Image 1 (cartoon, helix red, strand yellow):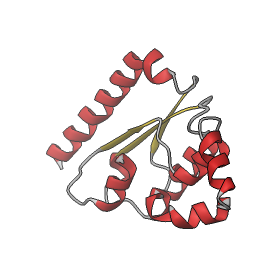
Image 2 (cartoon, rainbow, N blue to C red):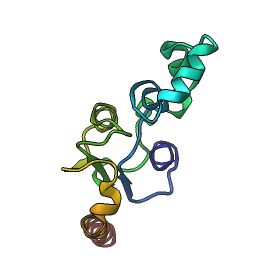
Image 3 (cartoon, rainbow, N blue to C red):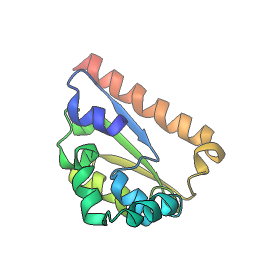
Length: 135
């Protein structure tokens, strides 16, 4: 949701997206947690290409963010089994490579690295708010 809002909403000044998914179709088709949903879709004849087409509107990498690229922080977990780095890379690249932090953990790192996540997020927001008020 955060990334979709950043792609559509003009009233947002700063975005921090943590362990974000990009394409839901990718997550369903290519990750362990999506395995059972994929199996059910395949039983009804839905292909990966179909799913990509059906859910394209939910893909934030299809749009240029309305938020200034310098005010976006993307945080990804290198070993995430729920949100593959390949998919996170697609968003980061399509958005012009805004600031990004790669954590050496998996998806559970959102809990295990919560202090680092909080400090990185707060630091980024403070820095950007200071720039906004000075500018």
